[in-house]
Image (cartoon, rainbow, N blue to C red):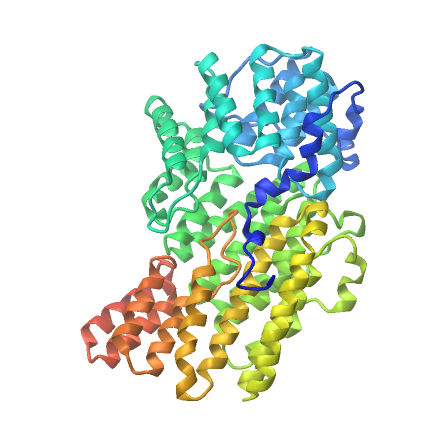
Length: 565
């Protein structure tokens, strides 16, 4: 049965799925190359050259090119890729191509920078892959550079682990080349288990970076690499000092401030997280002004604003959070850029953020407010065939209608909404192929998880509103929702903003089992450090257990979180 809670394919790594659209081109012979103009978005062709930045301790390597400026732009692009700014890297590779269309590393760079790009870049990505392979057939570039392309084809044909092995081969043949080692570690990473321990390939990748960092302990590039491969670690607080040091060393580079904000938020320092995201946004705005670009060209700015709003709400400042989310949702999107990365971020994240924040807060009247914030059918008519985001909007409306029914005491309608969500899950599953063609399987998968959690939460709420004999089932529904919640991924906050551990605890509260409620709240803190909803629950549990001293201690912690310290 393909519905919420049953299908796991929607959770396949989005990066792997994003490669599907260019997979078949990795096997192409390249008798005829695409013209270099096909690699360049028309808008970028008319803009001035991007700014050159200094990367202390960055990559240096010989680039095979006919023009020294082309070499410089390729190196700049590679450093930007390793610094987490693929789009700016792409712009530099484009400048190199203008100077030397047959530069292998410039063509490779465009291909690499656009691996995870949205539909607006599908044609440039295909053209870049085509040109890169054709140039290798013509023996362009050095042996090292062709080794990079070989590893790239392994990525396209067989996936990240094969790419890691291929880059490892390149690294062993060219032991002084740092970039091959960085690529190998990047593609070898495999994440962490539920206890925060690195999985075997992840451990190997970390050891590789640690070995490099022993030789260059203050290299921003290596710090960034280390932090990026550990963003989903349960124990983020361990790496927070390094994230702070990185921004001290390079205070004017926006991706580093976003990374710091992520680590601050994951450590429960919500006020400091909001400050970091604010700084990231300021730097991106300055970059857009200097570059002649707009927010549709800068999903990173939108992402920082989304995360900043969540950080404000996490600190208890819902008024500022909702104001920021409202302002963000109203930002205009040009009709001719509907398929841009920025537009995608606006549709999936920004335009659903107010509703998700209100669903977290759960105050009286918030359901009605949330329903008002979700784009209406007439608002998305122009998007038909260009995005699948309408399915997310519909799912949120169904979930909210279920909540509304429960607040009105209409359990029958709430149950009908739950069943409708199950059917809606099947419809979303049917959109997978379309989403892959459109280049938005990642946001669709993220939305699917959100709605899956909301469906299970709704079913748990229905059980809690039933007679005492039926309330026991709520624990299972809430536990299922909790299991489906993930840590902040893709450098975004969790798509579902309410810790489901709070619902598990509330199930125990209804039974007056305050000790079990306290333990459920405390378990939630392992994944949501300093979350105010969880802390308030713990404080109340202590009060109910006549442990005023412990309650006072938690109250002080709550005030500290709200103060932003």
